[in-house]
Image (tube, rainbow, N blue to C red; front, side, top):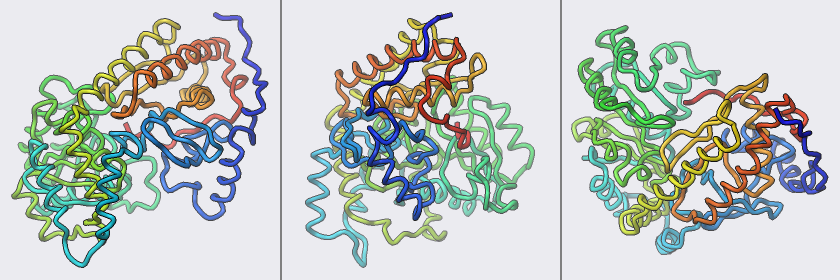
Length: 444
C-alpha cells in the first residue's frame, strides 16, 4: 500500500469557478429553462461532475474541441460516437455548404434520398431497402414497428441500449412515464447466452415479433453467437434486428454484420452515418421493409438535405480513404497502451479494458470500499484537467493522430497510480474536488 497523501490542488484555475467559470455560469442559467441544462442525458451534469467539468463546448476541429472558457480538449467522446471523421471535416463541410445553396427542406423528395440509400445498400450486406430518420431511436423504433406489423405479434426481446422510446426505455430503471402495458411487452436477455434467449422466447410462444440487440458493445461475440441469435429468432417466428447505431460504418464499412459475417433481417444505423449530422436509417430485407409503406413512419425532416449531403460525403470518404483501417490502427494502439498501463500500475483489481479497438471501454469496478462511480469521478476530474474529454470510452475518429494517442496514454500514466493510491488508502473523497457522480441507469 502506498503511503502517499492526496495531492493538494493549488492551481486556482482548478478551483470551482476558475477554469470552468463561464461553463458554470451558463449552466446555472440553462437550468432555469432547460431540464438538466442539456438536451441529452449523456452530455449533462449527470455524466460530468460539477465543479471539475466543462458543460458547454463552443467549437471543434479535427480531434480537438474547445469549451466556452477557451480550454482545449482532445476529444475521445466525439459526439457520443457520432463523429467518425473528425469535427468540421473539410469534405463533409464542403458538401453541406454546396447543398445549402440549393435549400434544405422541400415539398417533395430530394434526389439525395435515393443516392444515400443506394450507398447504404452497396455497403451493408443485409440492406435491400432503406428508410431514413433523424435519431437512432427513430430507426430502432421504426424497425420494431415494422417487425410487429410483419409478424402480427407484439413482444420484443432486447439486449443492449436502443434509445428513448417507450418500448425500450420501459425495460430500464428510467421507466418513469412508460405505461405498464408497454413495459410488459419488453423482455431483456443477456449477451452471449443463447440458452437465455431461447428461454425468453419460449416463455411466451408465438408472441415475439422481434429480437433486437447491439451485435457488439463491450464484449466480442462468442463463435457462432450472432448467427445463433438470428437462427433462434427465426425458429420462434421473430424478426432478427441488429442495432448498429454505433457499430455501423465503424467496425467495418458494412458494420458489425460485415465484420462477423452474418446477415440480420433488419439493421438500424445512426451516429457516424453523417459524421455528426442528424440522420439515421433502417435497412434490410425488402419484404419486411415494404411494411414502411403501410406503418406510420414519417418525419418532416426525414429528407432534410444537409444531413443527407453530409452522409453522402461521409460514406464516400469512408470508402475512399481507408477510414476503417485507420480507426482500427489508432484504436489498437490505445487498447494495447491502456492494458499495459493498467498492469504497470497494478490497477487490475478495479480497472479493465474492453470492446472493439474503434470503440473501446475503460471499465471501472468497486474496490476496497470505493464505488465505481467514486473512482470514475476522480478519473474524469483528472483527465479533464489534462485536456482530454471522455465518459469512459475511447471513441476513435479518423482525425486522431499518434500525438493524440500519446497524450491520452501519458495522462493515464499519471492518473492510474493516483487512482490506485486513492483506492488503496480509501482516500477517494480526499482527492475529489467535487461530489461523486451517481448512477443514471445501466445500459450495457
